[in-house]
Length: 450
Length: 164
Image 1: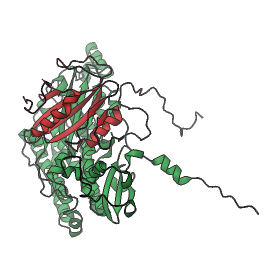
Image 2: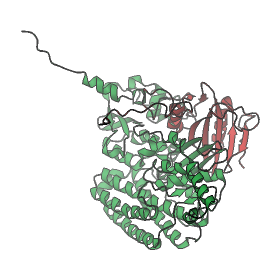
Image 3: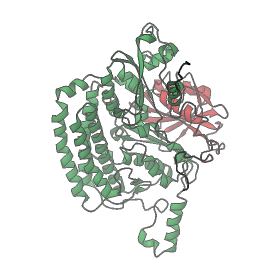
Image 4: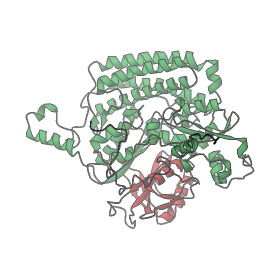
């Protein structure tokens, strides 16, 4: 009798071949050069140059003592498609490397094919939790090149919408962070409160997310009737509920156990890694572009820049919770001080004529048609403009060649840069803390991969 | 107006940029020394590194004495203590763009330089891990180059049902 044949396929190798990212992945120690190893474990930050002493780190550790595992790309706590490769010694993380690009859709390339008016629709989808701030950043870069003034009311509307957006973004963070730590009720509460803000966005701009509300020259529409009441209700409700979050999380022993003292970072390390936002402020560096390099009318409102001391997960939690309260303060001042007037620039270069005039004036019709088919031309030049997003400094480097489309649009995503701190933060921590740490960095993968 | 530090290499061209920050135009050999002088001059953070492909604008306006090349690397430095920004535009070359990595000065440029390498093919020498970051490992070409030919290759949707 002949040997029975079994149909087999080299499934494992096929799977590896299909999913491997090759050199981008975390390599085994035996394949890692000493400089690279030093970078991955953060030793380069501690010494001043690349020549690290092989004896000062756990360099002689053998491959068979450790294990490299993947967390992600589709892990529920990675907030998108972030793949973390962790080198574990038992329960503890030795090295970690984020492998990104799973959500890369070439948005910077797309931006080169869209006119300046259409571009806002593109950038708003990058950091999908803070669309208004993306649009604001993009519009401000264009306005700097165009050298046009924005009416006072548009400035204040932009500021109020940015702050509402900051609140909603931090609320999502509170919700998902609670979820990552097993507090499912926080997930529900955070999204419930965010819904109030999204409903107001829908009333104002017509969409809940990806608003396309802030545009070069001002905003797309004036605030709806009764907006003061709506915004006041939002402020009162959320302000009150932040104290409920305090009761639910801040003093809760299990929550504190998971957060306090976990994944610390120092100010020097944060600066060296170009980290911005709550992650930088948690180390005690009071750097908030709204205060230190004011844009819009942030120099006319009162608010505090929240800083931490220890740079640990709990500081980052406390900063975000208190930033919600500070944003509410700013929104309340916006309601009080909102000037009247135009909500967009009356410069015909960027603003279409009013709808009513299109029906009666041939010139207005042509103007409208030209503006929306060809778009407006931006003078030759290049500019870098930055604003404070909920995650840090979001920057926009714009190169114009005098045409109606950007020649190059680069967005400096704060999440993209902040992700570099992950290997440093996770080193020496346990796997369960790795989840918390990713959460407190608050990456939005749409912005990381663009 | 910000001025160059006395430590800066001699002969670096500067201009005042849009939004009133200083723009420096070092050569490739001056680049690293210039950034080093800024770091010593309290520019604590390198916020951004990105590439630009000026394929269609090789004759763009630049200060006297700066010869424009196809690729440019744009670095934005930030001083937290002085609240100032500086932008450095280094002409990276035409066919084989290459500049020195700033990793030894600012560890935070690691991902940004990888991105510029991935999307433009600009080589950063002395970078510890110059691999693709956004595109898959086996991707051919560098997509943000102007001659990359986006839109020229029809996208096939294999799973799409036929006309009937």
